[in-house]
Image (cartoon, rainbow, N blue to C red):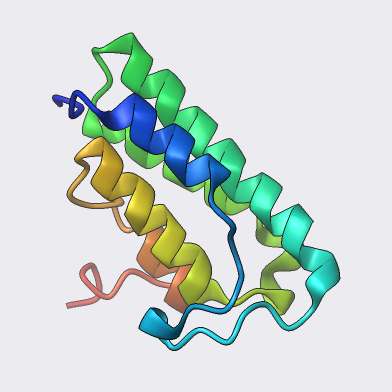
Length: 121
């Protein structure tokens, strides 16, 4: 897998931007519990760090990134009922776009719906 040349800068941009705030483009009202915002931000920024480490290797595969997604999603498990899962998934998709990854290996579907709809056909 070839990570785009500007990925490292994009990962840093991602980490530095405000997260879980109101976003009219996505019709997202912002996080309902402001005390969770720094906790969730830290967890999603750890995923950005994981992706950045994989990109720095230069030899990471789709599977490596998919495993990082799985690990990153597991970090949210203790907060699952308090989450806006759609917003969390949108951040993962943004990181996937930065890395040039086309699919999560079913991890985002499983996180969102409890199963991978592609495998239940």
